[in-house]
Length: 332
Image 1 (tube, rainbow, N blue to C red):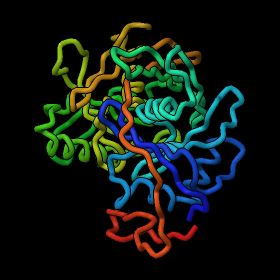
Image 2 (cartoon, rainbow, N blue to C red; image 1 turned 90 degrees about the vertical axis):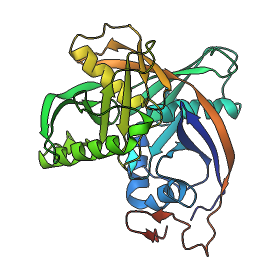
Image 3 (cartoon, one colour; image 1 turned 45 degrees about the vertical axis):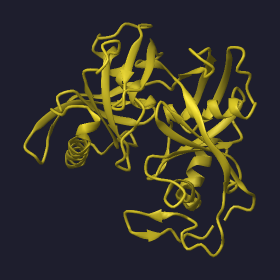
Image 4 (cartoon, rainbow, N blue to C red; image 1 turned 180 degrees about the vertical axis):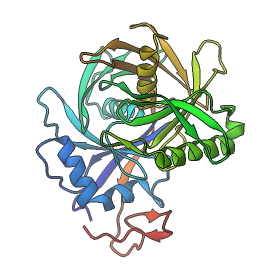
């Protein structure tokens, strides 16, 4: 277990929670943040499950472990993870991390301030901007996003056929508009079932991974509830939980799809609404080499801070693996 106390700050970004591990945890080896993330995944997965799984966490929670940056242009390194695996990038999590740095007094909220985050998929820049009240807006300049496959047809187990684009926005997404479901909190069971059918169909079609990236996020898109917005989405994350925010990497992937179809001009604002009604404002610029450089803006609020305790006698100190119905017993 961790030799030092594991200190954390919890936040939520437009409804989606982030647990930032400020200090403590295993020592991670690697020449860069990507290799450190691989070390966490292959040698210290007990720490991920201890932070995120019950009894300390839940399947909605996303972790963000602060580590030393290896990119000299970055001020902090961060490794994201959820209830299933270590992630390459997390848009809402990046906003939550910056809000946490502000909360800890490591950034000046009074002025426009930029912070560079070193992530496993590359450096991202976050700008702290004035908000409508005391809570600042945070805009993340995400990694290059692009369409991997366009107009992919799938035959679902229910007999329905859907089409969608597979796109990269820091994670890989299947994004569908003709899914046939109403995107509303009162329809969660049907939305969950449709996403699972799509994910099964992706696997059956040999599209469960592309270019080494698992296509394990499903994004259903529909009309917004608020006419001030452009679309509403429901995003199923790899563990099966739905994203309460409009999903930062999913919004980035959607921008890539819109740009590829000529449906959104560079610099134009896209207001992406989540299934709970929260909103990200987004825009893009053309990326060198193709695709887009997305900019995603949202707000985060601090919800808790404290110390995670991993008592040696606790049989569930490394978390409960819900799928297996047993405690994680890996010994660090």
